[in-house]
Image (cartoon, rainbow, N blue to C red; front, side, top):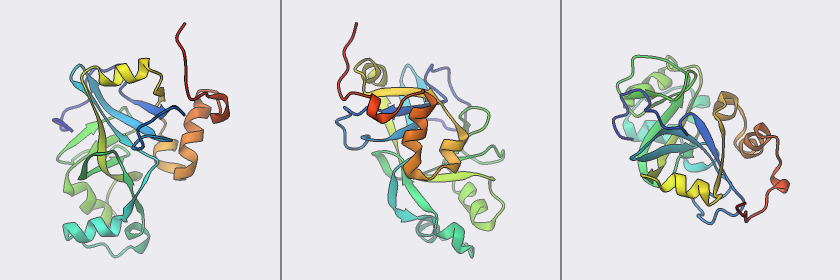
Length: 193
């Protein structure tokens, strides 16, 4: 993420969750829900919040040489945040100031890319709620807008319950429910009036 230390910019899709439409052909995003963290004229950056990577938080702690004795925390799954920079970590978390590289994603969610938040999570002094992801979703200037016009995505306001609390398999359906629709109501192709 570019200059994550600053607060969000003025993109109209910031603080939104993107829901992949049934016709999504990119296997990186089929069936996904992605929290947009930044959106401006240069492009957009988001973290997919419903795909499991092959790693646990314990794997990340071991790689970074961070001690953690809490097996519950060590066994938490790490998400596959997107296809860009899959070796780079992102922590979506409830607000807690003081981290080196953080950005607000609305009033109730922050994203941090620095190691210090992981050290605090390992020691039990971190944010109340968090999810860790590897990689991110990125779009160049105008690319996401074009995909929206092509009906690849629906958008809905970010919801902390979906981001932090729901089991991963429920997140897609719950995001759709926030729009008052069900998956069986969507067609893989859409037209324009």
